[in-house]
Image (cartoon, rainbow, N blue to C red; front, side):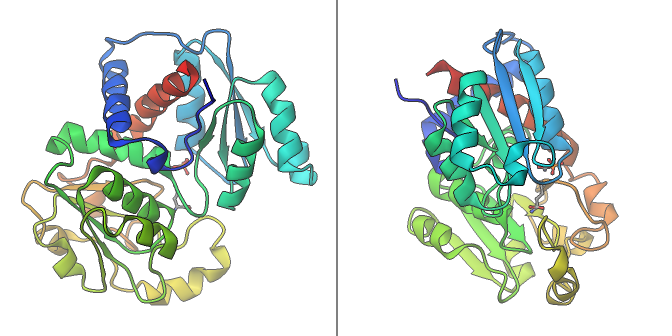
Length: 300
Ligand code: CP
Ligand code: NVA
């Protein structure tokens, strides 16, 4: 059986995703206590900061009976220029599964192509698929799933926006993106998915949010875009999820945010800390979906 990676949502079919969320739900409610990582080791390569991804993967590996190694690029030879392919071949001799968070998506693809063990994308400049798994589980828990539902993305056409597009294309829900001109999502990701479901891009936030079931956003400047932060402060003025905007959505709409958040920039404190926010369940769900993901990838 060839090894399986998870670099992007479309690596899994709609049925695979439903099954993965079923497993995650059983792990969450305590009815699945399997230890598929017993005697096995997860390596976690980070060239960017992280709170949730690092802790949820490390705790998840432990709960599945395995061990996790935190490999900061500051400390391993990768950070001093050792080729990705050499790193992948060597790590494959020690580890059973790798999670990587880095800048260029192509590096993760190269790692996966040269490693003989499963590779998980823990965020690149292009995509953040593990976060979307958690968001889908949160949708299932709080609004009964995605069928017939509309998700609205407010703000930067970044790695989260691109992954929402992949999810909409794979699962068939409606996605509306409100992004300022010049900050639209990745063109290739958009083109690959645009005919698979209803995906629209607008600059009109209120039009986008009308009747939506999920309202979600992210920071104006992602990791690696620190030098653009000032220009982005200008470009994203008004791209704020506040109570008035939430009032235009479905009355039972939920608010999601991958975190970390900047209160007062992309979202008000009243929304992220308010009754429609599900951000803490969303963060917790990283643990459950990633445990299910590791179990699935190690099964093959
Ligand atoms: N949402 C998310 O990936 O958070 P971290 O950057 O803290 O891992
Ligand atoms: N778009 C953000 C997500 C952080 C989890 C970033 O890439 O920094």
